[in-house]
Image (cartoon, rainbow, N blue to C red; front, side, top):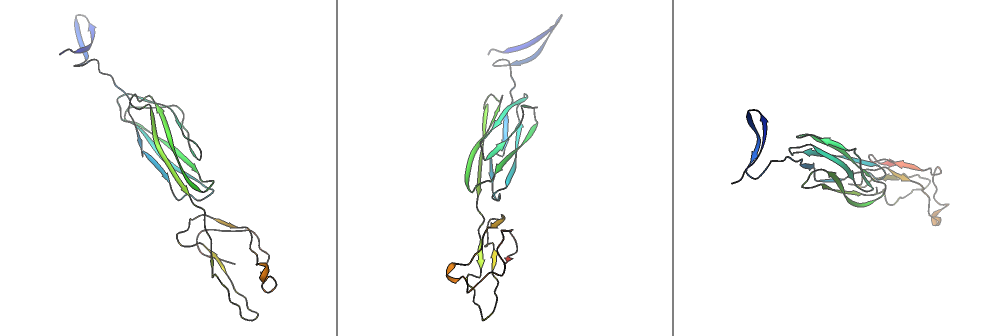
Length: 196
């Protein structure tokens, strides 16, 4: 069986530096992403979410990151970096919950890993709009009486602020019933019921 060896000459003695059965051994970087998928859940509408992605070099040579790339509403930035053998780098991945719906994309990581020069991490998110529940659904009045109603979050509602822009009586009952004060725009935060 043939062997390939690297030798150094320090006269009059030869030193064998590396020798393998199949040739000169070479060392390469090896990129591992953790986790391999990022899911953004519970991000309120109009706010932003962040998650950490860890890139590790489990190879036997320095890993050179050449960039990360994704598309809106996801984001991630990093400069060209070198991760030494056994080292790791944490990258912040962002999500902009500017509209409701389900979103998915991939985050691509380019490096000098010869087995996988472009590694992908799956990204997903879901943004739900807050919902409003009026209690009670009907009001009964005695003569010259007043009644209160409440705007509250239903059970298991999305914990995001909700803005009530207008509150008015239907034309059919206007005059018989009235609001004590003109309605002004009001934000209702998740939590205890807001009485009106």
